[in-house]
Image 1 (cartoon, protein in one colour):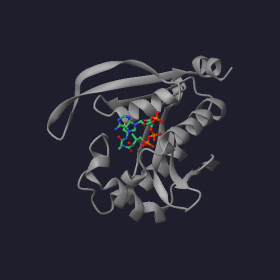
Image 2 (spheres, rainbow, N blue to C red):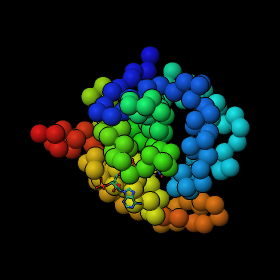
Image 3 (cartoon, rainbow, N blue to C red):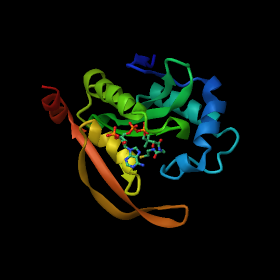
Length: 182
Ligand SMILES: CC(C)(COP(=O)(O)OP(=O)(O)OC[C@H]1O[C@@H](n2cnc3c(N)ncnc32)[C@H](O)[C@@H]1OP(=O)(O)O)[C@@H](O)C(=O)NCCC(=O)NCCS
Protein backbone atom coordinates (compact mmCIF):
# COMPACT_ATOMS: atom_id res chain seq x y z
CA UNK A 1 0.00 0.00 0.00
CA UNK A 2 1.35 3.39 -1.01
CA UNK A 3 1.60 5.58 2.09
CA UNK A 4 -0.04 8.95 2.77
CA UNK A 5 1.95 11.80 4.30
CA UNK A 6 0.87 14.93 6.10
CA UNK A 7 2.97 18.10 6.15
CA UNK A 8 2.22 21.52 7.62
CA UNK A 9 -0.31 22.48 4.92
CA UNK A 10 -0.54 19.47 2.64
CA UNK A 11 -1.56 15.86 2.44
CA UNK A 12 0.38 13.70 -0.03
CA UNK A 13 -1.80 10.72 -0.85
CA UNK A 14 -2.04 8.07 -3.58
CA UNK A 15 -3.92 9.12 -6.70
CA UNK A 16 -7.58 8.11 -6.95
CA UNK A 17 -9.71 7.77 -10.06
CA UNK A 18 -11.91 10.59 -8.74
CA UNK A 19 -8.89 12.94 -9.09
CA UNK A 20 -9.01 12.64 -12.89
CA UNK A 21 -11.25 15.66 -13.70
CA UNK A 22 -9.22 17.90 -11.39
CA UNK A 23 -5.94 16.72 -12.93
CA UNK A 24 -7.34 17.24 -16.43
CA UNK A 25 -8.45 20.79 -15.58
CA UNK A 26 -5.25 21.90 -13.83
CA UNK A 27 -2.70 20.07 -16.01
CA UNK A 28 -4.70 21.17 -19.04
CA UNK A 29 -3.56 24.79 -18.64
CA UNK A 30 -1.00 25.72 -21.25
CA UNK A 31 1.34 27.35 -18.73
CA UNK A 32 1.52 24.13 -16.72
CA UNK A 33 2.23 21.94 -19.75
CA UNK A 34 4.72 24.47 -21.15
CA UNK A 35 7.58 23.62 -18.77
CA UNK A 36 6.99 19.87 -18.45
CA UNK A 37 8.11 17.07 -20.71
CA UNK A 38 5.25 14.67 -20.19
CA UNK A 39 2.02 16.68 -19.96
CA UNK A 40 0.26 16.76 -23.35
CA UNK A 41 -1.37 19.94 -24.58
CA UNK A 42 -4.25 20.09 -25.30
CA UNK A 43 -4.88 17.58 -22.53
CA UNK A 44 -6.98 14.80 -24.04
CA UNK A 45 -10.01 13.19 -22.41
CA UNK A 46 -8.97 9.96 -20.72
CA UNK A 47 -5.32 11.01 -20.27
CA UNK A 48 -5.74 11.66 -16.55
CA UNK A 49 -7.41 8.26 -16.02
CA UNK A 50 -4.51 6.60 -17.92
CA UNK A 51 -1.96 8.55 -15.88
CA UNK A 52 -3.59 7.39 -12.63
CA UNK A 53 -3.74 3.75 -13.75
CA UNK A 54 -0.12 3.85 -14.97
CA UNK A 55 1.00 5.20 -11.63
CA UNK A 56 -0.78 2.48 -9.68
CA UNK A 57 0.92 -0.09 -11.86
CA UNK A 58 4.29 1.61 -11.45
CA UNK A 59 3.90 1.50 -7.66
CA UNK A 60 2.93 -2.18 -7.69
CA UNK A 61 6.11 -2.97 -9.68
CA UNK A 62 8.32 -0.93 -7.35
CA UNK A 63 9.09 1.48 -10.19
CA UNK A 64 7.92 4.58 -8.38
CA UNK A 65 5.15 6.44 -6.65
CA UNK A 66 3.13 9.51 -7.49
CA UNK A 67 1.20 11.50 -4.92
CA UNK A 68 -1.79 13.79 -5.23
CA UNK A 69 -1.01 17.00 -3.35
CA UNK A 70 -4.06 18.03 -1.34
CA UNK A 71 -4.45 21.32 0.50
CA UNK A 72 -5.54 20.21 3.98
CA UNK A 73 -7.53 23.35 4.68
CA UNK A 74 -9.87 23.03 1.67
CA UNK A 75 -9.30 19.44 0.49
CA UNK A 76 -8.47 20.76 -3.03
CA UNK A 77 -6.12 18.86 -5.30
CA UNK A 78 -3.25 21.25 -6.09
CA UNK A 79 -1.12 19.05 -8.35
CA UNK A 80 1.07 15.96 -8.28
CA UNK A 81 4.59 14.94 -7.34
CA UNK A 82 6.21 11.63 -8.11
CA UNK A 83 9.37 9.58 -8.23
CA UNK A 84 10.58 7.14 -10.85
CA UNK A 85 12.74 4.58 -9.10
CA UNK A 86 15.63 2.60 -10.55
CA UNK A 87 16.10 0.04 -7.79
CA UNK A 88 19.32 -1.46 -9.19
CA UNK A 89 20.99 1.86 -8.38
CA UNK A 90 18.80 2.98 -5.43
CA UNK A 91 18.12 6.11 -7.41
CA UNK A 92 14.96 8.09 -8.18
CA UNK A 93 14.00 10.95 -10.47
CA UNK A 94 11.58 13.52 -9.13
CA UNK A 95 8.84 15.09 -11.22
CA UNK A 96 6.11 17.52 -10.19
CA UNK A 97 3.58 20.10 -11.24
CA UNK A 98 1.01 22.35 -9.59
CA UNK A 99 -2.11 23.98 -10.98
CA UNK A 100 -1.40 27.60 -11.82
CA UNK A 101 -3.65 29.13 -9.12
CA UNK A 102 -1.43 27.45 -6.53
CA UNK A 103 1.98 28.63 -7.70
CA UNK A 104 4.29 30.70 -5.48
CA UNK A 105 2.96 29.67 -2.09
CA UNK A 106 5.86 27.35 -1.31
CA UNK A 107 3.64 24.28 -1.73
CA UNK A 108 6.01 22.36 -4.01
CA UNK A 109 9.02 23.11 -1.82
CA UNK A 110 7.02 21.66 1.11
CA UNK A 111 5.92 18.58 -0.86
CA UNK A 112 9.39 17.81 -2.23
CA UNK A 113 10.85 18.03 1.27
CA UNK A 114 8.53 15.19 2.35
CA UNK A 115 9.19 13.20 -0.82
CA UNK A 116 12.92 13.38 -0.13
CA UNK A 117 12.41 12.22 3.44
CA UNK A 118 10.37 9.29 2.09
CA UNK A 119 12.98 8.50 -0.56
CA UNK A 120 16.01 8.53 1.70
CA UNK A 121 14.58 7.33 5.02
CA UNK A 122 11.90 4.87 3.93
CA UNK A 123 12.87 3.73 0.42
CA UNK A 124 16.57 3.79 1.35
CA UNK A 125 17.54 5.54 -1.87
CA UNK A 126 21.12 6.67 -2.42
CA UNK A 127 20.40 9.48 -4.88
CA UNK A 128 17.50 11.70 -5.92
CA UNK A 129 17.75 13.84 -9.03
CA UNK A 130 15.58 15.92 -11.32
CA UNK A 131 15.80 17.88 -14.53
CA UNK A 132 14.07 21.11 -15.53
CA UNK A 133 13.96 23.28 -18.59
CA UNK A 134 16.59 25.99 -18.20
CA UNK A 135 13.82 28.60 -18.62
CA UNK A 136 11.98 27.28 -15.54
CA UNK A 137 13.54 29.07 -12.55
CA UNK A 138 10.67 28.07 -10.25
CA UNK A 139 11.51 24.39 -10.63
CA UNK A 140 15.24 24.99 -10.12
CA UNK A 141 14.36 26.98 -6.99
CA UNK A 142 12.26 24.10 -5.59
CA UNK A 143 15.25 21.77 -6.02
CA UNK A 144 17.79 24.21 -4.59
CA UNK A 145 15.59 24.97 -1.58
CA UNK A 146 15.59 21.24 -0.84
CA UNK A 147 19.37 20.97 -0.90
CA UNK A 148 19.74 19.58 -4.40
CA UNK A 149 22.89 20.72 -6.16
CA UNK A 150 23.24 21.95 -9.73
CA UNK A 151 24.98 19.21 -11.73
CA UNK A 152 25.04 20.73 -15.16
CA UNK A 153 23.21 21.67 -18.30
CA UNK A 154 22.55 19.62 -21.40
CA UNK A 155 22.31 22.04 -24.29
CA UNK A 156 19.36 21.73 -26.70
CA UNK A 157 18.78 18.30 -25.24
CA UNK A 158 15.06 18.16 -25.98
CA UNK A 159 12.56 19.68 -28.36
CA UNK A 160 9.49 21.22 -26.79
CA UNK A 161 6.71 22.45 -29.03
CA UNK A 162 9.09 22.73 -31.96
CA UNK A 163 11.96 24.49 -30.13
CA UNK A 164 15.20 22.90 -28.94
CA UNK A 165 15.66 23.56 -25.24
CA UNK A 166 18.40 23.25 -22.62
CA UNK A 167 17.87 21.04 -19.57
CA UNK A 168 19.40 21.72 -16.15
CA UNK A 169 20.10 18.82 -13.80
CA UNK A 170 20.02 18.82 -10.01
CA UNK A 171 20.72 16.01 -7.56
CA UNK A 172 21.46 15.04 -3.99
CA UNK A 173 23.00 11.90 -2.48
CA UNK A 174 22.09 10.25 0.80
CA UNK A 175 25.34 11.40 2.42
CA UNK A 176 24.75 15.01 1.31
CA UNK A 177 21.19 14.80 2.63
CA UNK A 178 22.32 13.44 6.00
CA UNK A 179 25.09 16.04 6.28
CA UNK A 180 22.62 18.86 5.55
CA UNK A 181 20.30 17.65 8.33
CA UNK A 182 23.05 17.68 10.96
C1 LIG B 1 7.66 24.46 -10.73
C2 LIG B 1 6.47 24.58 -9.78
C3 LIG B 1 6.04 23.20 -9.34
C4 LIG B 1 6.90 25.41 -8.56
O1 LIG B 1 5.92 25.26 -7.55
P1 LIG B 1 5.65 26.38 -6.45
O2 LIG B 1 4.88 25.77 -5.35
O3 LIG B 1 5.10 27.58 -7.13
O4 LIG B 1 7.10 26.65 -5.96
P2 LIG B 1 7.43 27.33 -4.57
O5 LIG B 1 6.35 28.29 -4.20
O6 LIG B 1 7.75 26.23 -3.60
O7 LIG B 1 8.66 28.18 -5.00
C5 LIG B 1 9.97 27.83 -4.88
C6 LIG B 1 10.78 29.05 -5.12
O8 LIG B 1 10.73 29.38 -6.50
C7 LIG B 1 10.56 30.76 -6.62
N1 LIG B 1 9.84 31.02 -7.85
C8 LIG B 1 8.57 30.69 -8.12
N2 LIG B 1 8.25 31.09 -9.35
C9 LIG B 1 9.36 31.71 -9.85
C10 LIG B 1 9.66 32.35 -11.07
N3 LIG B 1 8.76 32.42 -12.06
N4 LIG B 1 10.89 32.87 -11.22
C11 LIG B 1 11.81 32.77 -10.25
N5 LIG B 1 11.59 32.18 -9.08
C12 LIG B 1 10.37 31.66 -8.89
C13 LIG B 1 9.72 31.13 -5.45
O9 LIG B 1 9.85 32.50 -5.20
C14 LIG B 1 10.28 30.27 -4.37
O10 LIG B 1 11.38 30.85 -3.75
P3 LIG B 1 11.16 31.76 -2.44
O11 LIG B 1 10.39 30.91 -1.49
O12 LIG B 1 12.56 32.04 -2.03
O13 LIG B 1 10.39 32.92 -2.89
C15 LIG B 1 5.27 25.30 -10.47
O14 LIG B 1 5.71 26.54 -10.93
C16 LIG B 1 4.69 24.50 -11.63
O15 LIG B 1 3.93 23.57 -11.42
N6 LIG B 1 5.06 24.86 -12.88
C17 LIG B 1 4.54 24.18 -14.06
C18 LIG B 1 4.95 22.73 -14.15
C19 LIG B 1 6.46 22.55 -14.00
O16 LIG B 1 7.24 23.34 -14.50
N7 LIG B 1 6.86 21.49 -13.30
C20 LIG B 1 8.27 21.19 -13.10
C21 LIG B 1 8.86 20.52 -14.26
S1 LIG B 1 10.61 20.26 -14.01
